[in-house]
Length: 148
Image 1: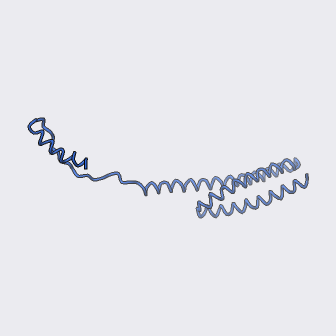
Image 2 (image 1 turned 60 degrees about the vertical axis):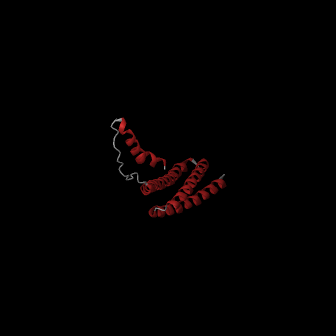
Image 3 (image 1 turned 120 degrees about the vertical axis):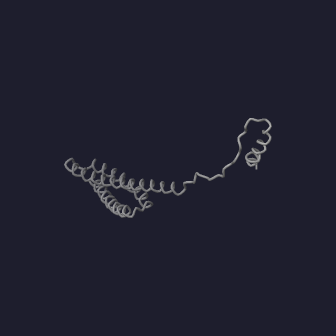
């Protein structure tokens, strides 16, 4: 049992070291706003945080009651630190996605206005003698142009 506890503690120490290195790398990427690296690092951090939580729970089952309180406090500090970085990454990625979306929308916006020539078409007065003249004018101006 004591041997299992030592193995778990060594694994946890190694994992904490890896997490600390990853957090330093993430901090640098946050300063540079390297979104590709941040996405990958965030996924790795979430996995490592889960692994650390499992190791902590295994160790808490094996250690004596006096040591549990101090160990839980230290474990929670690591968990909070990981959560803080995950939130920072997500905030930066969300901000970048919205700014990219706004940029894409402004760049691709089609122009909705087209300047068309004015059509001059006299109104039909209702006089049956002038209907043929009106109809010829209508066909030349509108009807035949739409068909072609």
